[in-house]
Image 1: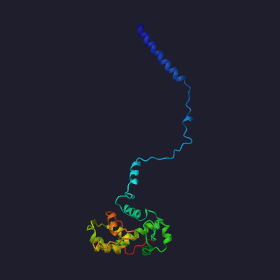
Image 2: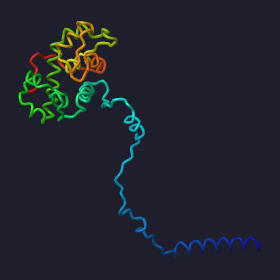
Image 3: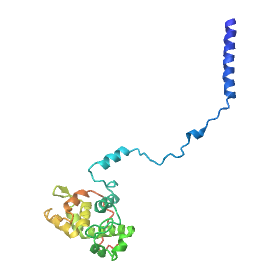
Image 4: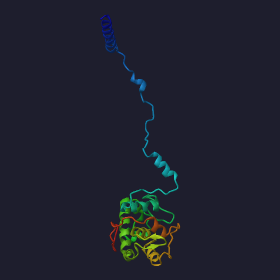
Length: 216
């Protein structure tokens, strides 16, 4: 009996002690000690930082990955031509994101190359118009050669259109009709074969053949 009373008293005193401590504490936390004032907090860490480092450190050329869509096609081609720079002019005087020559621009209705270089929307229209015109010129080649293998590369419509952008439709005709023996190279040594291979298999069904295609 005495033991039970002692246990109850001990438990009661313990509870009272704990309650008295919790109610009597008036201590406040000084938050100024935790201030971030003066610290440089302008940083970002991406989840795929290691992946990006590996990509940039590699010797593989980087291109925007948009799959095999038409947008993927034109952006990959633009990246190869100019790095995607609308205001680029190369050592041969080719202009813009897609590196147009002045003669080609005149054929699709653009006479002022200076204004063309400053107008990204016009450059995009020019790319479409030129592709439509080339697709009309090369319609028979597309029909007769797509699916065939030339120099180890399966001929595709996107490869034909990319090569026509590089070399002009006439040189693409020569390449296909000679089964790769007449392989035009531009001033930097880039060949029709290279473009046939690099830009193979994109969806260019968006481009409709148009003999009279104009950008403006």
